[in-house]
Every structure is written in C-alpha cells, then in structure tokens.
Image (cartoon, rainbow, N blue to C red; front, top):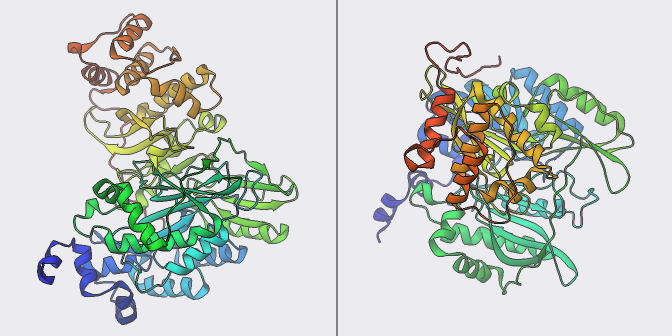
Amino acid sequence: MSTDTLEKKLNKREQYKAKLKPYDYYTKEFDTIDFDSVGEGDRYYLQDLGIFNTYFLEDEFTIRLRNKDGGRFLAQDLIFLAKLVEEYELTLVITARAGFQLHDIYSDDVIEIWHKLNDYGLTTWQSFGDNIRNIVTDVYDGLSKYGHIEVHPLIKQMNDYILKNPKYVGMLPRRVSIGISGNEANVNSFFANDIYFALAKKNDVYGFNVYMGGKNTEVAQDADIFLEENEVFDFFKAFVSTFYTHGSRFSRSKTRLFYMIESMGLTKLKELIATEFGKAFNHAGELQLKHVDFEEFEELHDGSYAYCYQSNFGRLDAKEIHQIAAFVQEHHCEIRIGIDQNIYLLGLKAKTAPLPSPALSSTIVSCAGNLCPYAVWSIKEESALYLPLESIYKNRIKVGFSGCAKGCGRHRHTDIGLIGLKTNNFGATDGGARVFIGAEHDEGQSVARQLFSMVPFVHLKVTLALVIELFERSEEKNFQLYSRNILNRYSEDFLSLWHLYNLKNKTKIALPQQNELQTQEKELTLLQNSFKDFVLVEDDMKKSVSTMVKELWTVEGEDPHYKPPIKRTNFR
C-alpha cells in the first residue's frame, strides 16, 4: 500500500500526526499560536499539551493538570492553584482521574497560564489526547492497613518514561488509562481502566495480576498474567511499544485497547507484548481484593488518621483551597487527591478536620457537567437536587453520574449509575437520567445493567429512594452483595417492572433472594403474585415497561417542576 493510500485510510487525527508529530508541533509552533484563531489541527495538538477547546466554544479554554505520581500534592501546590484561580477568575474542579482541571480560561490568558503551571512544576503534558493518561492508584497507597505494596515508585517510573518522550507524546493510537494498587481494599474500583495491575499473590509472593481492555462501559479482562513488583515497569514499556506499533489508527471509534483485543484476541496481544517483554509470562496468581466501606476518618497502618474532605461534587473554590492548605501546613499532614474527586489528608494525630465538607459526596463521582461542552445537563447541580444524598451516604452506595454517553462519571462501574439526558417523551419535562444498577465492581465481575432508559428528573429522587429502600429491606451487608445475590438473578425488564409497580402502588415490596437465574416464566409468576394489578402488555415485558413509565411519568400541560433547557454556566 502506498503512503498516499495509507494516509487516506488513517482517521483524521492520525493524518495530522503523519504530517507533523505533536512534539514537533510544540517545539516549532506552540509559542506562536493565535488562540483567537485556533484551527482543527491546533485543537488536536493542544490536547497533548493539556489544553482543550472546541470549535463551537472557540473563545473558552480548559487546561488539565496531570496528577503528581498518583494524586500526591503539596500544600504549596494548592496555594499556587488557589492564587491562579483568584488572579484569572477561573473555575477549578477535581477530575475522576485524581487531577485538577481549570475552566473558563480566556484565549488571551491560555499561554500565560500554561507556562505558569508548567514552570512551577504542575505539568499539563499528555493529560488529554492519545496518551497514557493520569496513572491512578488508591488514595491510601503505602499507608493503608490493607496495603502490601506501595506503588508510588512504580507510577513515578512510568510517568518519567512517558512524559515528554518525543516518540510517544500524542502518538499512541488512542488514549490509555492505567490503574495500579498494592492494597487489597480500595476506595474505588480500577476495572474501568485499559490496564489494571491488581494486587495478587503467587508462591507466597505479593505482586500483580494484569487486567486489560476496560473502559467506561466494560470491565477489564483477566489476562492471566502475574507480575512481580520489579517486572511491572518492564511490562509497561512492552505494552506501550506494542500498542504504539500494532494498535489500529483507522476508524476512530475502534482504536481503544478494548477493540484491539476484540479484533486480534487476547492471546495474540499477549504474544506481541511478550516479544517486547523478552520472556514468557507467568500465569495469574490469586487475586487479593475485598470489599471495605471506608469512613470519613480512617485509621492508617501507623496509627495515624486520614480525613476525607468531601468536595462539592468535584468543585473547589479558592477560599476552601487556602483553608485546606493552611491546615496541612499547621498539622504537617499529607494531601492526596482521590479518583472519587475528594481531598484526603493523611497523617493526622487525631480525628480533626480543617473545615466541614460542603457536600455528602464521598461515594459519588460526577463528570464536569455544564463545564464540558458534551454534557447535556449540569450534573454537579443535579447531583445535589435530585439524588437522595443522605441515604446514599448512610449506605455507602457508589454512584456514578455522567453528563453524556461518554461515561466520564463511570456510571457502569458503580452500584447506581446515571446518564443525564433530554427527552420530550413525557411531555413538558425534558430533563432526566438513564438509570443503571448492580455492577459487581470490586472484583470486576460485571458492569451495571439498565434499570430505566429515562427517568424525568422530577421523579428521580423518589425512584432512587425506592431502589435504596428495597436494598435496605434485603438486609444484605452492602449494595454489591445485593447485586450479586438478588438483582443479578433477574432480567432487566423484570427489575424495571418490579420497581415501577412499587412506585405505582406506593409499596416497598422487597425482591426475593434466589439461588439461580430466573426464567421469564418464574418472573411473571412472581410479578402476578406480588402485584394484583400487574398487566402484561401484548405478552411482552418490554412493552409492559414502556406502558408503565408513560403512565407514571407523563405530564399534561405545563409541569410545575418544568426546568427550561440548561445554559452553560460561566462562573465569572
């Protein structure tokens, strides 16, 4: 195939890379860019430097920081960020990969802010684009009473290898997310990552089992590989080289690692990586993971304490950042950022907090919402308005709220998942959420399944409150056990109807525990025996669900709770 023919088959982003590598763009063109007139190619290249912009919001820019080797920051880092937010009137949010993101940046200020961040030492390199994104770990790495291997040195090795490496800056076929933890209990699951190094044990030696191909809608697969601690970095380099060389660069929708595995098979991919690795892989060890519900204050292995400061669904203002930094300096503790978008203060001598948390958000992950051009709704606002926060917090239920199908809130990897949507299916009420429940996420067994394709926001809190009340009545110890032992023994349509008839009749009839998957015949019998008004529409459970949701949630005329279409918020 000729070079011209090949370039025509490459997706548009790859065509730009073929003409000019992102690192060369940085050295030759970056400092001369007119940010008032950014072109399509510029937008691609700028992502590799941590700058995001879209053609339909061409005067607004976002800058994303990489986390500092697993989310560890210093008090002076926070003070620097707070002053930057104040000086330029910016909006700061914590990302779902334990980093920071600055929004509402004017075109005149982009280059100045970018240089200030990177000159200070808070790098923005390779935080967007086709790169190894923030490498994440458990927030208690190295200090947890559940820990066996501190992975911070490994993350630093991997970051040092990839960052500003001209060969790899923006040059992978697609982004790669990596999670690694040496703890047997983690605050959040890592099975949504492309690569997950999970704590395992083999021949009485702790190391890592490798899982591959995860994404926001899929769990990573067991690759049947065990790595000792000193092998992780070499595996990482071998993987990066393999993905760079053999990953698809054609249809953009099929370039993630998940599709590479789907196309060539996991066995072939492992053979390619093993060639780069230089030796055969050992078979997987015994996975060392368990469920723990973490509290606001956690005791660490040395007897000191950690405090979880629950952010306002990822949002931070300059005043609270200054307060947190001052507390850290006074008490000589450590700051870490979690992938749950909260701030953790580690090494406290007593259960002392710098200031009360502004929200009950410790188990809730939400996307950037209206700060992102792709989100349909202001997710951070909707979280406070439409979620039964007290019940979620009391039961330590993991919730992921995404503003669109891209799934940045990891809604398929939580106990309850939501996607903000718009619809006119129910009359004047045009806002709502698609609801998912039942992921078995701690050990990567399954993603959540759809409960409802759309629940209007005005009915969402009542619906979710019922889901939680039925869980409470099950007397299972946590929601994942409820999913494993009850929810996931039934079909999606049955679960929808069970909750709908409870809503209709204002009842709270709990789901019976089952020892096996239920047939449709058994499910229908259970519905008929439990709800005397149950009607099967045209002998079809899906049609029955559709009929019931219209009956319950359609409004006539002007809904008193109607919320007009959202406008993107500028916090200036």
